Image (cartoon, rainbow, N blue to C red; front, side):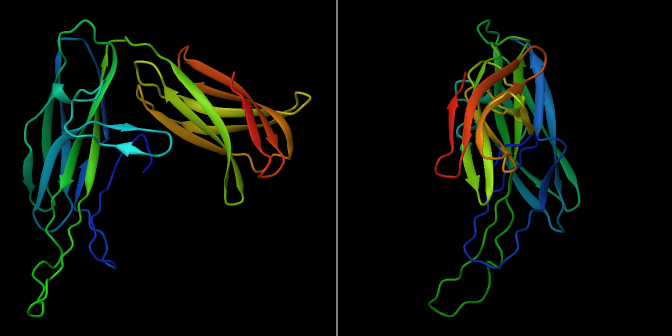
Length: 281
Protein backbone atom coordinates (compact mmCIF):
# COMPACT_ATOMS: atom_id res chain seq x y z
CA UNK A 1 0.00 0.00 0.00
CA UNK A 2 1.52 3.34 -0.99
CA UNK A 3 1.05 6.81 0.38
CA UNK A 4 -0.46 9.37 -2.05
CA UNK A 5 -2.12 12.83 -1.85
CA UNK A 6 -5.53 11.07 -2.15
CA UNK A 7 -5.35 8.15 0.18
CA UNK A 8 -7.77 5.26 -0.49
CA UNK A 9 -7.25 1.89 1.14
CA UNK A 10 -9.16 -1.31 0.44
CA UNK A 11 -9.31 -4.26 2.80
CA UNK A 12 -10.70 -7.21 0.87
CA UNK A 13 -11.45 -10.40 2.79
CA UNK A 14 -11.84 -13.26 0.32
CA UNK A 15 -12.63 -16.84 1.32
CA UNK A 16 -12.67 -18.09 -2.28
CA UNK A 17 -11.20 -17.02 -5.61
CA UNK A 18 -12.51 -16.08 -9.00
CA UNK A 19 -15.17 -13.53 -7.93
CA UNK A 20 -14.93 -9.85 -8.88
CA UNK A 21 -14.61 -7.19 -6.17
CA UNK A 22 -17.53 -4.82 -5.75
CA UNK A 23 -17.16 -1.40 -4.13
CA UNK A 24 -20.63 0.11 -3.99
CA UNK A 25 -19.75 2.74 -1.39
CA UNK A 26 -17.40 5.56 -2.28
CA UNK A 27 -16.35 8.94 -0.87
CA UNK A 28 -16.95 12.04 -2.97
CA UNK A 29 -14.27 14.73 -2.87
CA UNK A 30 -10.79 14.84 -1.43
CA UNK A 31 -9.49 12.30 1.05
CA UNK A 32 -7.54 14.91 3.03
CA UNK A 33 -9.32 17.59 5.11
CA UNK A 34 -6.79 20.16 6.27
CA UNK A 35 -7.33 23.15 8.55
CA UNK A 36 -5.18 25.75 10.33
CA UNK A 37 -6.63 26.36 13.79
CA UNK A 38 -5.72 27.95 17.12
CA UNK A 39 -5.80 26.20 20.53
CA UNK A 40 -9.23 26.33 22.16
CA UNK A 41 -11.08 26.60 18.86
CA UNK A 42 -13.54 24.17 17.26
CA UNK A 43 -14.20 23.62 13.59
CA UNK A 44 -16.50 21.35 11.63
CA UNK A 45 -16.41 19.44 8.38
CA UNK A 46 -18.36 16.91 6.35
CA UNK A 47 -17.61 13.79 4.35
CA UNK A 48 -19.90 12.92 1.43
CA UNK A 49 -20.52 9.18 1.13
CA UNK A 50 -22.28 7.83 -1.96
CA UNK A 51 -23.85 4.47 -2.75
CA UNK A 52 -23.09 3.56 -6.35
CA UNK A 53 -24.88 0.25 -6.13
CA UNK A 54 -28.43 -0.88 -6.84
CA UNK A 55 -29.30 -1.99 -3.31
CA UNK A 56 -29.18 -0.19 0.06
CA UNK A 57 -25.75 -0.23 1.70
CA UNK A 58 -24.90 -0.05 5.38
CA UNK A 59 -21.78 1.92 6.26
CA UNK A 60 -19.72 1.99 9.44
CA UNK A 61 -17.90 5.21 10.42
CA UNK A 62 -15.08 5.21 12.98
CA UNK A 63 -11.74 6.82 13.86
CA UNK A 64 -8.22 5.42 13.72
CA UNK A 65 -4.73 6.79 14.07
CA UNK A 66 -2.51 6.72 10.99
CA UNK A 67 1.23 6.39 10.40
CA UNK A 68 3.52 5.03 7.72
CA UNK A 69 7.17 4.22 7.05
CA UNK A 70 9.42 4.43 4.02
CA UNK A 71 9.49 0.64 3.57
CA UNK A 72 5.83 0.77 2.55
CA UNK A 73 4.21 -0.19 5.85
CA UNK A 74 0.98 1.61 6.78
CA UNK A 75 -0.64 1.42 10.22
CA UNK A 76 -4.22 2.28 11.16
CA UNK A 77 -4.04 2.03 14.93
CA UNK A 78 -7.16 1.66 17.05
CA UNK A 79 -8.45 3.17 19.19
CA UNK A 80 -7.66 6.61 17.82
CA UNK A 81 -6.06 9.15 20.12
CA UNK A 82 -3.10 7.18 21.48
CA UNK A 83 -0.43 8.41 19.08
CA UNK A 84 1.82 11.28 20.19
CA UNK A 85 0.38 13.57 17.50
CA UNK A 86 -3.05 12.03 17.15
CA UNK A 87 -6.09 14.30 17.11
CA UNK A 88 -8.38 11.31 17.57
CA UNK A 89 -9.60 12.50 20.97
CA UNK A 90 -10.46 15.91 19.51
CA UNK A 91 -12.79 14.56 16.82
CA UNK A 92 -16.49 13.82 17.28
CA UNK A 93 -18.54 12.08 14.57
CA UNK A 94 -22.27 12.74 14.22
CA UNK A 95 -22.96 9.07 13.49
CA UNK A 96 -21.28 5.69 13.52
CA UNK A 97 -23.67 3.64 11.36
CA UNK A 98 -25.75 4.77 8.40
CA UNK A 99 -27.77 3.19 5.61
CA UNK A 100 -27.60 4.77 2.14
CA UNK A 101 -30.30 4.09 -0.47
CA UNK A 102 -29.06 3.07 -3.93
CA UNK A 103 -27.78 5.94 -6.04
CA UNK A 104 -27.91 8.45 -3.18
CA UNK A 105 -25.38 10.35 -1.05
CA UNK A 106 -25.23 11.09 2.68
CA UNK A 107 -23.15 13.58 4.63
CA UNK A 108 -21.14 12.46 7.64
CA UNK A 109 -20.41 15.50 9.79
CA UNK A 110 -17.56 15.81 12.25
CA UNK A 111 -16.28 18.44 14.65
CA UNK A 112 -12.71 18.99 15.85
CA UNK A 113 -12.30 20.63 19.28
CA UNK A 114 -8.67 21.66 19.72
CA UNK A 115 -7.73 21.76 23.43
CA UNK A 116 -6.96 25.14 24.92
CA UNK A 117 -3.36 24.13 25.56
CA UNK A 118 -0.54 26.54 24.87
CA UNK A 119 1.96 23.69 24.54
CA UNK A 120 0.33 22.44 21.34
CA UNK A 121 2.35 23.15 18.23
CA UNK A 122 2.75 21.77 14.76
CA UNK A 123 0.55 19.19 13.02
CA UNK A 124 -1.94 16.73 14.54
CA UNK A 125 -4.05 14.24 12.60
CA UNK A 126 -6.22 11.15 12.57
CA UNK A 127 -8.32 9.22 10.05
CA UNK A 128 -12.08 8.91 9.62
CA UNK A 129 -12.63 5.41 8.25
CA UNK A 130 -15.66 4.86 6.03
CA UNK A 131 -16.29 1.14 5.76
CA UNK A 132 -18.94 -0.38 3.54
CA UNK A 133 -20.80 -3.28 5.16
CA UNK A 134 -22.08 -5.05 2.05
CA UNK A 135 -23.91 -8.35 2.39
CA UNK A 136 -22.10 -11.65 1.95
CA UNK A 137 -22.00 -13.09 -1.55
CA UNK A 138 -24.36 -16.03 -1.96
CA UNK A 139 -24.72 -16.63 1.81
CA UNK A 140 -27.78 -18.84 1.27
CA UNK A 141 -26.39 -21.01 -1.50
CA UNK A 142 -27.69 -24.60 -1.18
CA UNK A 143 -25.30 -27.12 0.31
CA UNK A 144 -25.29 -30.84 0.67
CA UNK A 145 -26.53 -32.22 3.95
CA UNK A 146 -23.81 -32.31 6.56
CA UNK A 147 -21.57 -29.86 4.72
CA UNK A 148 -20.84 -26.27 5.65
CA UNK A 149 -21.56 -23.57 3.07
CA UNK A 150 -19.00 -20.85 2.48
CA UNK A 151 -19.74 -17.22 1.65
CA UNK A 152 -17.57 -14.24 0.83
CA UNK A 153 -17.62 -10.89 2.57
CA UNK A 154 -15.79 -8.07 0.87
CA UNK A 155 -14.94 -5.04 2.97
CA UNK A 156 -13.87 -1.78 1.31
CA UNK A 157 -12.58 1.07 3.44
CA UNK A 158 -11.92 4.70 2.57
CA UNK A 159 -9.54 6.58 4.86
CA UNK A 160 -10.14 10.34 5.13
CA UNK A 161 -7.30 12.20 6.81
CA UNK A 162 -8.38 14.99 9.16
CA UNK A 163 -5.37 17.27 9.65
CA UNK A 164 -5.12 20.15 12.14
CA UNK A 165 -2.21 22.60 12.01
CA UNK A 166 -1.84 24.71 15.15
CA UNK A 167 -1.33 28.19 13.69
CA UNK A 168 2.03 28.49 11.98
CA UNK A 169 3.82 26.80 14.85
CA UNK A 170 5.99 23.73 14.88
CA UNK A 171 9.58 23.09 13.86
CA UNK A 172 10.04 22.10 10.22
CA UNK A 173 12.84 19.58 10.12
CA UNK A 174 13.71 16.51 8.07
CA UNK A 175 16.52 14.19 7.12
CA UNK A 176 17.17 12.14 3.99
CA UNK A 177 18.86 8.90 3.13
CA UNK A 178 19.66 7.41 -0.28
CA UNK A 179 20.50 3.97 -1.64
CA UNK A 180 20.92 2.21 -4.96
CA UNK A 181 18.52 -0.61 -5.79
CA UNK A 182 17.58 -2.87 -8.69
CA UNK A 183 14.08 -3.39 -10.03
CA UNK A 184 14.32 -5.89 -12.85
CA UNK A 185 16.67 -4.32 -15.38
CA UNK A 186 16.30 -0.86 -13.85
CA UNK A 187 18.84 0.82 -11.61
CA UNK A 188 17.09 3.05 -9.10
CA UNK A 189 18.23 5.73 -6.71
CA UNK A 190 15.89 5.46 -3.74
CA UNK A 191 15.41 8.53 -1.56
CA UNK A 192 13.96 8.21 1.94
CA UNK A 193 12.55 11.28 3.66
CA UNK A 194 12.08 11.27 7.44
CA UNK A 195 10.14 14.09 9.13
CA UNK A 196 11.99 14.74 12.39
CA UNK A 197 10.13 17.98 13.10
CA UNK A 198 6.71 18.95 14.46
CA UNK A 199 4.85 20.02 11.34
CA UNK A 200 4.02 18.08 8.20
CA UNK A 201 6.13 18.65 5.11
CA UNK A 202 5.30 18.23 1.43
CA UNK A 203 8.66 18.43 -0.35
CA UNK A 204 9.34 17.85 -4.02
CA UNK A 205 12.39 15.65 -4.49
CA UNK A 206 15.04 15.71 -7.19
CA UNK A 207 18.52 14.31 -7.73
CA UNK A 208 21.22 15.89 -9.89
CA UNK A 209 24.28 13.85 -10.87
CA UNK A 210 27.73 15.22 -11.65
CA UNK A 211 30.69 13.35 -13.14
CA UNK A 212 34.24 13.16 -11.79
CA UNK A 213 35.16 16.46 -13.43
CA UNK A 214 31.99 18.23 -12.35
CA UNK A 215 30.12 17.82 -15.62
CA UNK A 216 26.32 17.45 -15.36
CA UNK A 217 25.19 13.86 -15.87
CA UNK A 218 21.46 14.42 -15.56
CA UNK A 219 18.73 15.76 -13.33
CA UNK A 220 16.00 13.40 -12.16
CA UNK A 221 12.68 14.45 -10.66
CA UNK A 222 11.30 12.14 -7.97
CA UNK A 223 8.02 14.03 -7.48
CA UNK A 224 6.30 15.17 -4.33
CA UNK A 225 5.80 13.38 -1.04
CA UNK A 226 3.84 14.09 2.14
CA UNK A 227 5.44 13.23 5.48
CA UNK A 228 3.83 13.79 8.86
CA UNK A 229 6.02 14.29 11.94
CA UNK A 230 7.50 10.95 12.96
CA UNK A 231 6.76 9.29 9.61
CA UNK A 232 8.90 8.54 6.57
CA UNK A 233 8.31 8.02 2.86
CA UNK A 234 10.30 6.84 -0.14
CA UNK A 235 10.57 8.00 -3.73
CA UNK A 236 12.71 6.51 -6.49
CA UNK A 237 14.33 7.82 -9.66
CA UNK A 238 15.42 5.67 -12.57
CA UNK A 239 19.11 6.25 -13.36
CA UNK A 240 19.50 3.22 -15.65
CA UNK A 241 20.65 5.44 -18.52
CA UNK A 242 23.62 6.81 -16.55
CA UNK A 243 26.92 5.28 -17.69
CA UNK A 244 29.08 3.33 -15.22
CA UNK A 245 31.44 5.45 -13.16
CA UNK A 246 31.67 7.53 -10.03
CA UNK A 247 29.28 10.44 -9.54
CA UNK A 248 28.41 13.09 -7.03
CA UNK A 249 24.65 13.19 -6.43
CA UNK A 250 22.95 16.27 -5.02
CA UNK A 251 19.59 15.25 -3.59
CA UNK A 252 17.24 18.17 -2.92
CA UNK A 253 13.93 18.28 -1.06
CA UNK A 254 12.08 21.56 -1.69
CA UNK A 255 9.23 21.97 0.80
CA UNK A 256 8.43 25.53 -0.28
CA UNK A 257 9.22 28.93 1.21
CA UNK A 258 12.64 28.67 2.87
CA UNK A 259 12.33 24.95 3.65
CA UNK A 260 14.86 23.52 1.19
CA UNK A 261 17.08 20.61 2.18
CA UNK A 262 20.04 19.21 0.29
CA UNK A 263 22.31 16.20 0.80
CA UNK A 264 25.34 15.14 -1.27
CA UNK A 265 26.23 11.50 -1.94
CA UNK A 266 28.94 9.73 -3.91
CA UNK A 267 27.59 7.02 -6.22
CA UNK A 268 29.68 4.23 -7.69
CA UNK A 269 27.98 2.59 -10.66
CA UNK A 270 29.98 -0.47 -11.73
CA UNK A 271 27.47 -3.27 -11.94
CA UNK A 272 24.98 -4.68 -9.50
CA UNK A 273 27.46 -6.24 -7.06
CA UNK A 274 29.77 -3.27 -6.81
CA UNK A 275 27.30 -0.40 -6.70
CA UNK A 276 27.45 1.71 -3.58
CA UNK A 277 26.41 5.00 -2.04
CA UNK A 278 28.63 7.01 0.27
CA UNK A 279 28.21 10.30 2.02
CA UNK A 280 25.07 12.05 3.11
CA UNK A 281 26.30 15.48 4.05
